[in-house]
Length: 53
Image: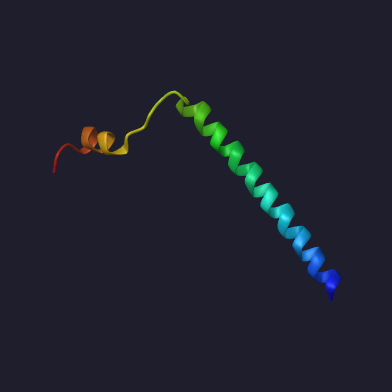
């Protein structure tokens, strides 16, 4: 029974590590695509696209 718990915990840690690595890679790709020096103000963008309502 303890072996099953240990194996489950190990798989959980491996999955969490993989999720963190994939998330960091996706975030880095977003910064490279959008430009990390750009500041995206969503309220201002909405106002430019949709105007005042």
